Image (cartoon, rainbow, N blue to C red; front, side, top):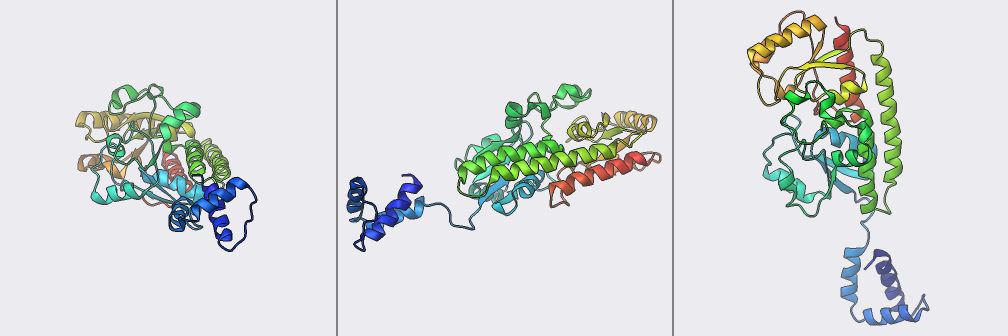
Length: 332
């Protein structure tokens, strides 16, 4: 029964019990007289059908922390948001803990990039039928495909990305413009689940404008660079580099979960020096051999955490990446 009808019935039944009939419709009076014999049943019906009380928020769980930063910044106190994977975990492979299963069960909406990134999740999510699942990459492919990068847009993608399925690079959260589109996508689901709640669509449009301005300001800052060459640990920073018109000249690890060989490291070192590239390393994939390699003089190195461990807003997270990369590129 629609919530509005339930509200009307509850109100009219209470008035009818006082000898007052506010609605003169014969149909309404008949319904009221019929239900007045079962007040307890009607009360339970109304309790389970009426909208959530003021203060109740839709529980949004995201797969990775950067997505939760987007949700929190875009919708603020209108939603309750948390993320599933610890920031130091790889989104490509993760073993769910019992506490993770409980959070999935308690959530109402689950926002993830999609099976191209979180390969361990599809079968797990099938168990949680109560979840509204929002697949960011699928939405972008169907509605905002101009924001996406195909794997073949990177000259390193063919040899470095067999671990990903699909036509598009899934590391979409590293673009501020994509962050705005993700918020707009989520707003559609939130508005459907809570039509009388916050103006999610308006909040998302405002956030999308904010992200566009952040991207444009970062592009202007990067225009001052003479050197634009990046050498990243794995092939996950293409959206960020593309947004700032930077060049990813190579990657350290052919597969993010596999340590590179000595010969490849030697080639990378020579390329980094000759091109004066900034080497971007990640805390999730540090190894002793790589650490020794990174102590070699004449290499410009910066560490960026793509999972945003230290940040509480997406804007700060994005600005932090921009600041570190620009400082690294300016150090030569």
